[in-house]
Amino acid sequence: MRLNGKIALITGANKGIGLAITQRFLGEGAIVYAGIKNVAEASSDLNILKTKFDSQLNIIKLNVTESENCKEVFQQIKKSCDKIDVLVNNAGIVSYELVPFIDFEKLQLMIQTNVVGLIKMCQLASRYMARQKSGSIINISSIVSLKGASGQAAYSATKGAVNSFTLSLAKELANSNIRVNAIAPGMVSTERLKQISQEKFGDKVSQIGFGRMASPDEIADICLFFASDESSYVTGQLLGADGSLTI
Ligand code: NAD
Image (cartoon, rainbow, N blue to C red; front, side, top):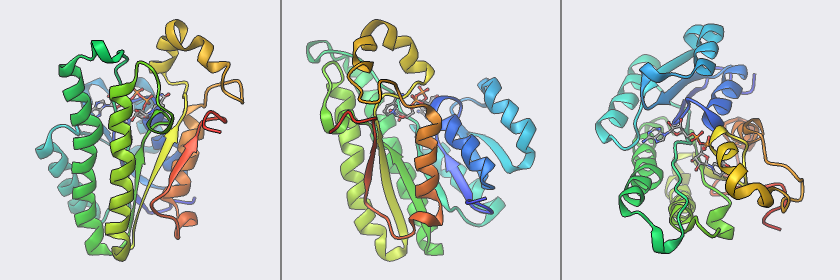
């Protein structure tokens, strides 16, 4: 029960890494607000968690590109719980295009989601957390922000922005006792990557020292560390979880 009584908001919680974080946090006693883009389309896995954890899990509409919606979510949490301890910015989209073929409409949406939405969420969280003089913000970046990847130049740029924003925000919020850290996963076996890996990434898996992708649960475990008091003196860090890809 390493998060007993903590209030956590997770974006993009419907599936993949966000779902794994939701499950892990619930198991550790947190009250979780699971933000999903469309509540009517809650995944069966998330609904199973709702049945199991009942009032400990709140499934809420949260589209990080809709600034009013983001505000309402914080207001709702403040009203119900009077505090927010943890924000996990997990929501993200990716597009795979070589530079000559970058689709600028897709790029705009990716920037709005991965960067602008994340910054908006951090801004709102920091206002609430600064008043309570505590909090932990966790941003999900990617290994490609450090290592680069052919076909992912635009995506990697959005995650590079996440890294530098994380560092500056950590500096800005340190004297309010708010910690800000990021995780840079390598290849994680979510549905999204499983589908693509068959066509494009099959050979890449063999380049991973561990010889396999990470499971979403392995990323959730790192999130738990950053969310819990076990990392109470850790801020401004970007922790890679890539099975040796960056070394
Ligand atoms: P996923 O596609 O399975 O899940 C992403 C979630 O984000 C979905 O639930 C989706 O609905 C949500 N989302 C998308 N746009 C949103 C918006 N505007 N508002 C709110 N939610 C939105 O992806 P995943 O593999 O679980 O990835 C989660 C995070 O981890 C992303 O930020 C991704 O960039 C990052 N990441 C993933 C991998 C990987 O290999 N899977 C590797 C490195 C980093």
